[in-house]
Image (cartoon, rainbow, N blue to C red; front, side):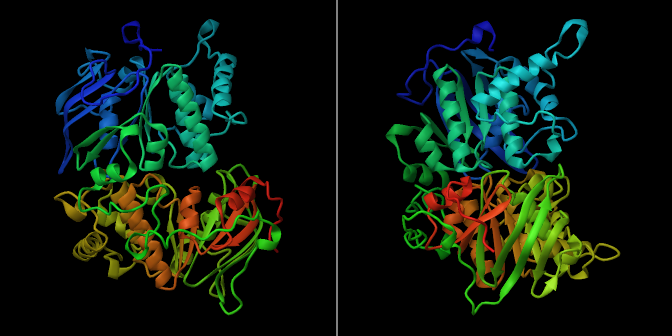
Length: 563
């Protein structure tokens, strides 16, 4: 709970957004510099008590930096922070200070300790103590179970180690951890980036319930549909500066988009659903033509007989980190010049299937064949040399070494290839030249150090560009893309969709693993659905609708895995 002097008044309707007199949070003239980067420049942010306030902008606009300043992780170079009218600028020396003031942050990238259990991560630093100074485990478990029940996570395994959780599960634990500490002001950085639609709806229902109870929500998102559906007020940042403040009910998605990307942006894009392909796609043609009939086993389609498969997955069974079967007897084909989306709710086996294809996880049984070559027992490096490229679901955890510079990260996986600047001794000039070409070709926004800029200094969208560029520049035949737009803004998502379309045009086979059902529908030629580790069905673009896919994803369709 907040200290007594910070107890929140009754929620007020947001009738104005510029310096409201009863603002719970006031951030004024906030400036924050990093080496070579001006992240926030004279930014203001006003959040009313009991509001559901959205903070939006492109990658690199300064949103996460502003949240981290409010949470005490960063100190502003200039400016002041007020909470319930009190100047707390000098009180925010660390996140511990923010927690004491009733602030809780859920970051886009998890901050759990991998070796600790879910229970240990949640209570760390806020352990309930029993007589004798021992951890009151029963009280901790009961409180967590109560919170988990409200979040719809009743089957949460508190004993599993954090390192064995999927990215989506880690996000849920982060939310639980903030609520466990009694946060009444929740700062959420891309809270639904890894959630399936049903899970996102459940989360927003919970957050709205918390707002009705008097909590205040400040959330960063790139999904303007979420902004329009759930927020009361919106603050837009562009290039580290304020670009607009709005009462949500008095604006629309097109206006917000123009503020985010400037007058030169593609303001005509329909944001009622995620964008689907950059310059290659017409806004109308990117929509799918759906039928309304329910999915069934008879709807399962395979490659046309005239198209030889590039990738063949035959009766593949894969176990997860806990040795339970995660994928069972899955068979799937991908053709050259085809994008196959793989849909499913979190925990359905997507992650394990993707890791088995690229060699990060051992196949229990079955075969993986690429262009007639059996890769089932080949190493990651051997598969890469055969043309398997990989975009991992977590760019921080598996895609980049954040303390390496851009050139060094671009070299990863190709360090033995002289043409990349690798070999027995690294050829620094070749490495930098190749990285500089990549920066130019993929429009990676970097600081004055250019190819020598540390990866951690880039925005999330520009980090993802480096990961995607490295995969595409290796002359692949098969691209395995896992959650490639997670946490990306509109323009960065356009970039990813353009790359996927370019890969298709070049004749690559593309496997797109995504929890975003709209994304899968918009980008894929065919869509495979996993349910409880089994392939529940494969639908063509024309057959797929959200309803039919949702029925397969939840097991409601009753269809069997294709043979």
